[in-house]
Length: 293
View 1: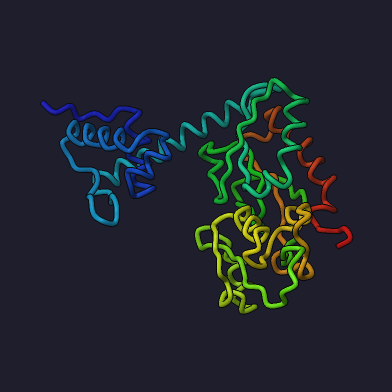
View 2: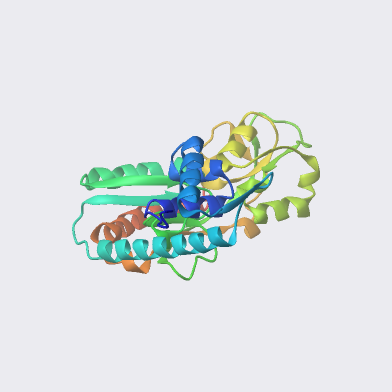
């Protein structure tokens, strides 16, 4: 007789495949091998006696049964994350793990010394930093705190605006070419405002190099591939670069420190907010690019 049961650890597997649309994407999310995901899915479908996903060249699409199980998995994940947040929200000690997400650019150009100072002052708090240029889901405990640019933070989160980030066009400081080609964002960077600005300026037609990382754009400009729009706090620190333009008002963006409302009374979250916000605000002149150039 077929065992019509689903184990707890099957739910994240089904959810990961449904949300990523592939075994390789699910494997990366679950931090296991592709072969492990393939084997576990096969075992689950045999045990349940139903096919959960249709396989095609475009990926894995949930069947009605798979969609039902994926929805259940998401609901269970939300319930578990909510319970964890509520329990963590009662924590009044300055110890434990604090998971923070930010962009690669902010971590490289601004935050690492600030986080180092925080950890040195609070050695019982273990900082976990998740670098992601896409927003993570704080409701599902992908992270406890987000430090991100954005003019409209999600209404489900609470936080504090800690600065403004300015941007300008930069070029290699030894360049004498008035007609430099452009370095630009790849569509996977997810930066539509910069894409629109470059299109309005006609720069997209002269772009010879695209990359899905602002640090990659910085490296490309530094290597002489062309001019590019970069955050002032990052590019001003590069001695081999110089500004080619004034700051671009339409690309100026707020910097936010965000968390879930359930975590706002947690001692380590509250302390992190106070210390890190003060440290970022003390560097606002750097963020705004207010220095001789």
